Image (tube, rainbow, N blue to C red; front, side, top):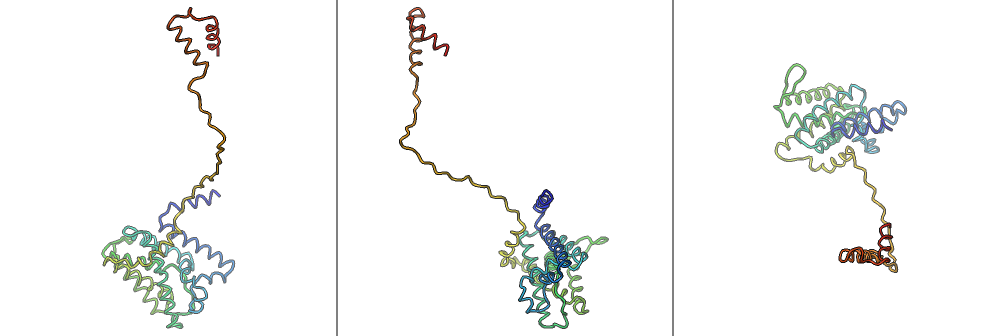
Length: 287
């Protein structure tokens, strides 16, 4: 249990971007295990290259974005998402990043399914997996929003707009070269929503606002909720009207008598006391 608690604490200490990456990696690893144990189960979460099959498993328009074919596919997607997602968070909120990522995943699924519907033989029968559409949405958004910003690429600096152009050229070349046509269509879908969102943002229009409620819904999965404090149980108390409160007397009878004797001493002296008064004062002193 200590190991689980440590994982929970580390997860809670991460930014929303780190938590998103952690969830994608965890789900990918779990689906690899599922694929090894029950290969058919993996297909339930990938996006089928068929409109009718997609209607039978509608959740796949989102879940495919959490699956990856191998470690290289997963590594590069997460590395790029971490880099460009961090840049986006310098200017925008976590909700907007999440909303854009999931909008990219949905847009990628739409481009893929449209391609399958219009050109089934050209696209092929392979199902779609990978977070690339969501990653493309974030990358192209950053490149279009800050096109002149330079970033360091190993040995030289390069403006973000050229990175965006390069990714688009690679995807188009893959489509026309019939290399991973379905995947590259999804890339273009993610890129399209990312570019459009960036252009509108520069005009002062947040097109993601319409999807804000969806973004908030997903954001709730990445927030740790504080434990609710247990309220003390209310008890019903009945008051017995017949019981009278005991009011403490201002002075006891003994103290009153002592005070009178002391007053007599101060006025007439100790010798003025009677034997009974002296005995009473002596006994009171012992008490």
